[in-house]
Image 1: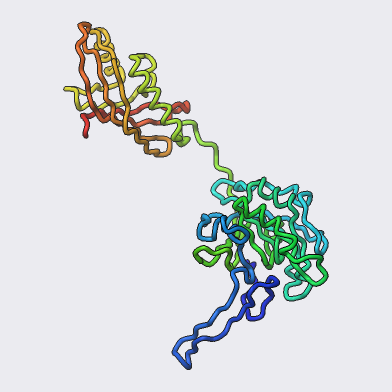
Image 2: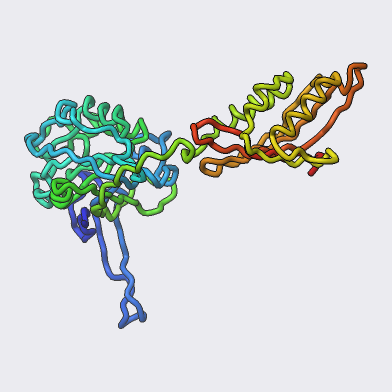
Length: 373
């Protein structure tokens, strides 16, 4: 769906903006190739306003993330607002939050259908509806990073018979939207196509990418949209298949380290899966199982072994869905016997965590080697 007005010489522009002039610069007959010369303003035709449009201190187009220029459509039909009258918060009260409508889908962009695209090229186009401050603030409060409409501006435009110029009455809607990082798209066309697609039950995705102009306050766009199937809800994953989060892995690792430092036998071995495996390079023989490891641990404690200091450094985590790899450098000082003998080890420990069938996070493999490994 093409939602743009074509750029042509003499097309309508905002009062005071540069006129559009498109002419031939080179021809096949004369120079061997056709090349056009384009003279346009940054807000010619269907275009996007960057926050820089109304404040020198706000973001220019090239400083905005690309994702703000596309998303699924939330559209409000405000064709009932009369010529030259404000669109209020009451007109927009039912808009959904800007969050994505389904898993795997982009966040929403708001379109306002005023119906004034039909007046394009006539004097009536200047007398379009506009957003009052309350409506602009509601759009921001609902989380929208982009709003577009089929009219010349989100603020009133100067026209014959208007009480004041645009500069005199200011740009309150621009200030509120742009001041909160929301881009503004003006002079959209063909929104009936979008409405028809939405009415049929489809989701609509829109693309509003501007020309790449450094430090720009705005730029023309080719606004296009397409229908997409609404994403189907994913079947609930079994507890053991749910991806681990960084926080869960950090908590599991910290609990394991703390239990080791306190010689808290039960808590320490509860952190390991029953079928956990071990490779301890500093030892003459690695324990073959969790129970074998606990047997070694119990023997050490019985001889007077205890942890005097344990320092975890250089921690790293790699998330792998329902599994994760945690590694750190661990410097440990232990009392080796009842007589108070001491030993300090400097080792690299790598632990593989896995979400268990009950949803808990357990250690399934531990690899200990001298540092540096």
